[in-house]
Length: 261
Image (cartoon, rainbow, N blue to C red):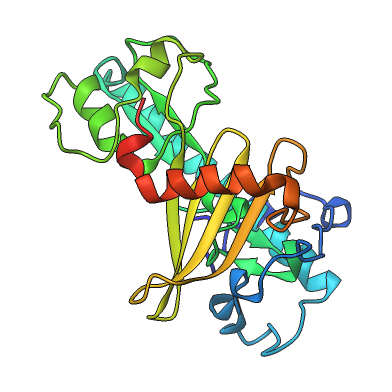
């Protein structure tokens, strides 16, 4: 949890007033290509979700309410686990990492689920607790889940292989403002022939939709997360961004090897 179906004990649903749950931003990003969006078949497989067309306001709020309840239910289970570590006096020797494997859309862009390269689906939480490092620090640097293994290796005093894609984030736990990765990478397919390759820098998300055999790019997206955090408009067609797009295209092609700190 949280994951479909959104099932949690009633007391966690009771923590939230459904009438006060805000509705998501419903409009598709301007200039975004059709291929960027999903058919949200995962959600449509449920009997009370329409086979075609949008989810109405009442169901949207019910689904968000269920997600909130599942998050709180999960939080309670994490608390039980941590309390047991304390009871066994193991916290002083235990590293805890809490992360979510993907984001989720709740009707944003009139889309649902996780099957895209949008920021909402690729930006996720990651919390690391180590008794030997300061608590409560927040890091704004770009990190990726491939960083978890080398991070755990270093925290546990194990040797870190040099051929890993990920980078230990222990230096960020010491100095959250340390200069770090230039970009984070993700990808999501459309069928077996098209792959969406996406790069996230400190300000931009740039995506190319490409034929995996011919390497021909059919569509592109560019979002300025600093000035447009909800990604309401793809600015890939603006003439003034030509040089920026060329730079991001180069970074995407250069790959993770050239984005490491």
